[in-house]
Image 1 (cartoon, rainbow, N blue to C red):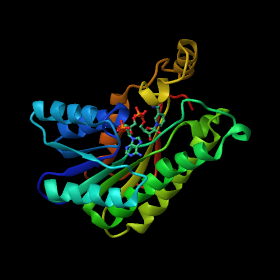
Image 2 (image 1 turned 180 degrees about the vertical axis):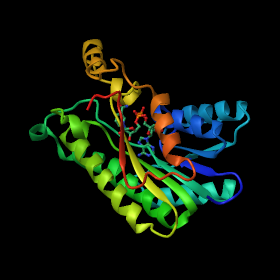
Image 3 (image 1 turned 90 degrees about the vertical axis):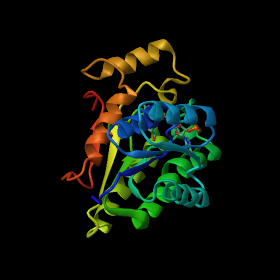
Length: 246
Ligand code: NDP
């Protein structure tokens, strides 16, 4: 990697897994851009928590589904910290109601693809030309692709697209020493997973993994930290981080 302090953009870092990733990378010495869509207060709290521990961070609002906003996100990162080394493409949505495919409306389908696929693409396109030599990209998939749970067809389809962009972009970035990987978490205790589920549903899903608990955002941040380390040999892969659920 290039010299000087490494700089990471974490999309969707105001809450959940992204907030844990931002704090983990800051603790590992990265300057961090804390991207968010609407949660201004929560994003500011993540920045404050990083700064309290002596780290460097800045919050930048951008809806990842909007290509112009994502260009501004990278502009803001470079204006703030000089360059970008790491993109963690974490922002994603899952509707709290999970109708089966035959009952899914157009608006749900379109929004899932706009955020999870187009949003990931928008940031990958910027990263492909704007990351420094030796950079790192981590996308976000899901273990539901392997579990094939009813109700998740469209969501899992968006993440399958993310996995495909991951291994093809890894090849396209030949010569830049940039690795591109994806993390596929299993059920993880965040708003995205917990909203709309009964205690019984949460308990049942938590017990599915042989480690018999939900993932914690910090568990996923640990896996991201592994993939962004300098000198990594893992490239073009999807790493399932799920306690062994699938
Ligand atoms: P949360 O709902 O807890 O947090 C989502 C974050 O993404 C928030 O910071 C939110 O910002 C941001 N975000 C949402 N939409 C946009 C957008 N259009 N532009 C920019 N930021 C946006 O989700 P998780 O932390 O649980 O999920 C993180 C990633 O992990 C997602 O890609 C998800 O699909 C994936 N995942 C999660 C699993 C789980 O069980 N939790 C399992 C498998 C995969 P704001 O607050 O401003 O809206």
